[in-house]
Image 1 (cartoon, helix red, strand yellow):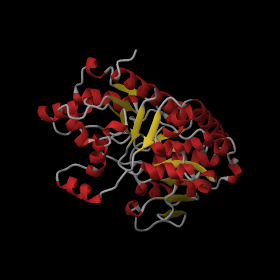
Image 2 (cartoon, helix red, strand yellow):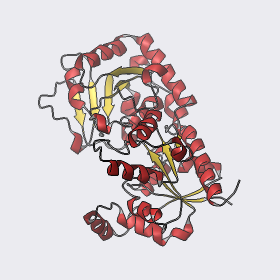
Image 3 (cartoon, helix red, strand yellow):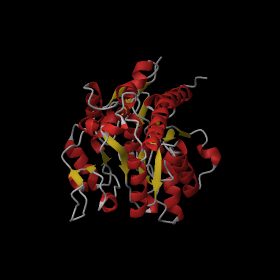
Image 4 (cartoon, one colour):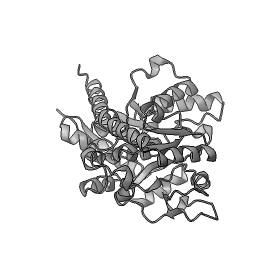
Length: 370
């Protein structure tokens, strides 16, 4: 018998799945469902994200996000074997509390891609609470080895407590994109600008300063909330906050010289910032320049697909931009390695293989199967 899995999130998975069905978005934005459906060993259902908004308003008064979703999960508890939540902390709070006191017994599987605990409060009780919180999940799939190690160290979790609960998986882009975009990439001569898109912890201000006075073009795609604060944007920099769907960015990515990922965040928030943009890097076989992030699983310099720069380092940005703009051979080598990284180690099938293994293992243990 197949395990029945409910997929929930802190944003609408119905919309993400619908965008994939329409060919507008990749399967990786549905967090393994598409690939597991194709494999046939797990029955995964997208659980409706929101039904009674008033419950969410009530929940916020008590510090419980997505109360509506969690109550409906409880009302449908006999219809699934495992609950799977890629973004876990904000929409499983009530369920975890009930699980801790024995009133909710279904396994919960989550992915971890941001710091689980910021580590700013050294109070032993807060640390104990955070440790018990994460260990209350049946299985936690970390999307970064450094993040896993950092979590274990900060929360002082003994190995015997997490060895059967914590695992590591690489989240990567939809493999159907490989032949659609990666193999059919544009030639160096057809690429005439740099691109930077995203909204989480982005440092567009430093990037704009790096382009000031350079004879290179930059296109920034952001959201209305993340428009750069720079007042005097130079003429070689364009800022667009109206194009929001990844599908609409495809022609821009194809014609870009490289994808730029400028980041800024305090040490306490260091997690997998920039990971989604790295999906675009390998999808379109592009080189990348990125603010250094030791928490990512993919070392862009070790893979040979790009360059790290330090936070706020304008001169380093300029130096790396010149290298990629003026050295065709380096650009070609990085593009080739970006394509190879996509094909061999950074894709949706790699993630789905591990996710399937975790879900089947949890199901078998919960049902006392070997």
